[in-house]
Length: 158
Image (cartoon, rainbow, N blue to C red; front, side, top):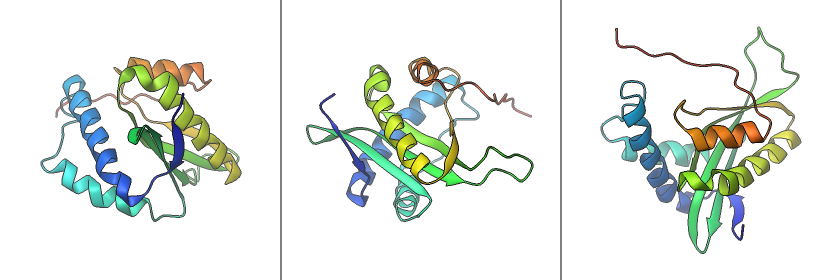
């Protein structure tokens, strides 16, 4: 790939929110209850992302190509619950988006590789990546990188 991975900056947040909104729209089609977009989700996410960029336990990265952000990842370093001992911090990744599903093996993989390097350098012992069950390209990339499925969430209206 001919893009650049760098730390996300506040100026990147509008594009990161745009990519997230694109993902939310897709995810909502596949599980309309769990992934239901909140009214005003874009305006709510902007200050949240801006806040995450200021935290010491966060690794926010963007993949930029020809002046356009093609994807991003926000990794959070967390302690495991006291009933588990993975041997160090957990690198938790929930916000991880690429512009198009075909870019998971290129842009997505490059972002995750970099996040892993940075997380290891900060004493992380494991990485946990959230993805929807329908997100085939992302799931295939994660499996190809050696990640394994650890949990599933089942949802129903009550």
